Image (tube, rainbow, N blue to C red; front, side, top):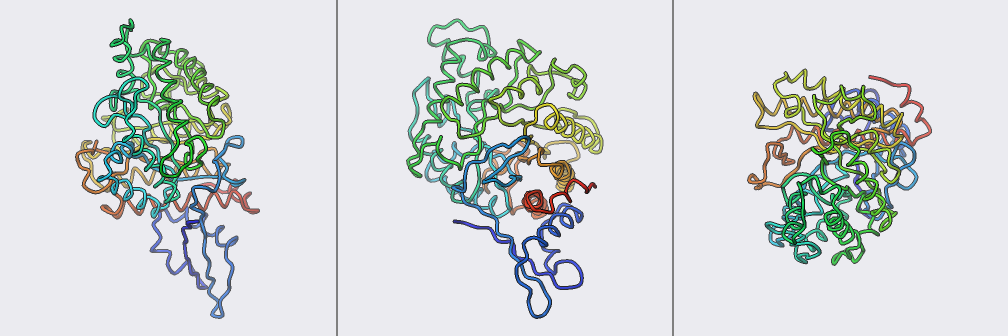
Length: 451
């Protein structure tokens, strides 16, 4: 068992003597979270009156499957809150054994920063280092790269969310499935036939089955039996230009979610949605950034087999041209609106599964990114305090050193910029402490406090 130990020494009177060294978002978060943690966890009173305590956080990938209970996550009967990250490239890089150190570096550094969930691709359709070379034809070398990713994640106590396919053309996506069908002589009208054409749906189901039933050559555990995997994701950022109502995607989600659960009823399942509202609650469409994309956050996530809801948020793309303050206000409304719906309508946990601030934006600097991340993190924390429905967030995206050619403007290398790393680490420890707070006998405190 691997454990992360936070050692705190508190000598009366005043704050912890090492408090200034703890990465933090804001003083109030840690006054809340660590005060309650200390009250419950402190074990030894030394002769000089100082209290020494260790908060031991289990980091064992075999600790159990993450499940949902009502509108929050649980792990072994306790609330599960998290701070996490995206690293879409892990399998692609790990397919080349000489580059696997980059995967290890990111997972090791993320674990050291308290990050406990990583979202990454379990697809690469056609093209360079393809996992799926053509329908039902796979490159074992690339699959072993994914085996390595799962093995390393387990080693460092990080849970994985694995996505099955892409909306976009990167790493193949819907367009590659369409091309395969056309190459086989099938009449396809366009990429959005992915959601309705039997041939394309069968290709996709075959890929789902191949991944879920994969036997890991390193851990010697089938993917569907491995609790290192937190959840499956149907598709990264589904969109449908042929039907903006969300009904076509809804039918597809129902069919594919049932199929996934027929193969694996141990793991959680989510869609991969960005959070755009559709026609089911027309007044909610005013929350969208001015347009629809063919999904319906409410109806799509009400499907029984979908265990939790996700949203993405890119203010520098979706509400570009607005000031940083205006973008932050829009972001807060976007998150809060979906949290309210997850809590009262869906009654399922909510995850902010992608967000970031691009270095390519006008007027960008590290300080602006840090301010943005701190604000988002504080919002996540404050909503999580209300019962855990807002379960965590996944920043886009972490990379290893020397991966500049992968940088899409959102790249963060832990340790290269200390201020950003402190903010990320601070949120990790705040969410960890809050999960304990919600679980403790003093948990009523969380619902009585507000910022």
